[in-house]
Image (cartoon, rainbow, N blue to C red):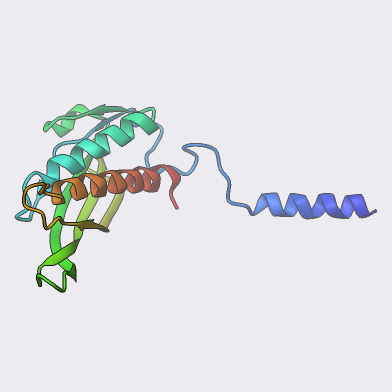
Length: 172
């Protein structure tokens, strides 16, 4: 009697656990095999941020999905097209060096939006509120000075691409 009760509890727990097979909850239909990813639009003053984000998304889709990814500015080449836009780019000082009064770390924040459309221009996935932040330190030694914000943008683009692909594949 006790073993049946425990078995029932385990079965109930497994039913509501939220596990699903790969692609079972994906936003993209089974008819999508090829995904065109044109270079993201950039509505900010940041230089090459759109290239970094586009490349990261292509790498992430290529490494984690069975889709054939086309890096092209001709969106009609795929079964679906992923359109991305960099909407905001902000760098603000976080901490200051007391002796020099100069900023010693910064917070970079990038806002983006993404839309996936099928051949008939129907929206398959859309999120216009992606926001990613990354802190980076600056060096005060001018001899060994390295510009850190491009590296922060690279890290942000990887985080963005991972989140985007997870959102599209896992549908959470």
